[in-house]
Image 1 (spheres, rainbow, N blue to C red):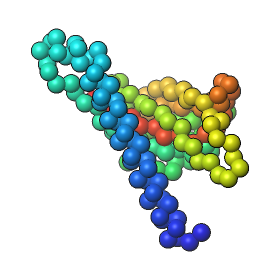
Image 2 (spheres, rainbow, N blue to C red):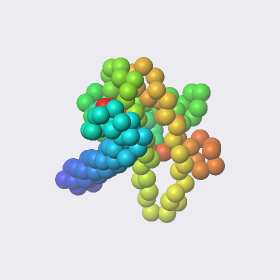
Image 3 (tube, rainbow, N blue to C red):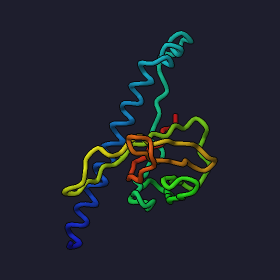
Image 4 (cartoon, rainbow, N blue to C red):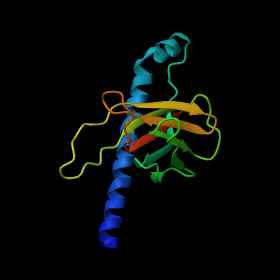
Length: 152
């Protein structure tokens, strides 16, 4: 594949990741605006709801390599104690008020089955998040994924 095509695909990937994260941020803000937090804020005489912003993001391959990320992003496949345990961080401690959102990235080629990925589990640690991906039946299954971190 020529460098021109590779650069074009890389650009399309960045645009797609940005669009997914922008849509997710919009959905999260709408969720906060229409949820219980909005009711509490209105009753406390605070009509505006603080918005959350995407402060960190990453696109991680199934082998743990980082394809793209915000500044300082790092990722790796830990594979112990679970074969699908990934570590994602951005080089510093994250505030406790930050919330992660993980979305699996489907990168299917010809002849590959569609929809064989299941949910992902996320757990915080001091410098980032551990992400674990599963097949629909609950078994460990390596999948590429996007992670976005929303902070108020």
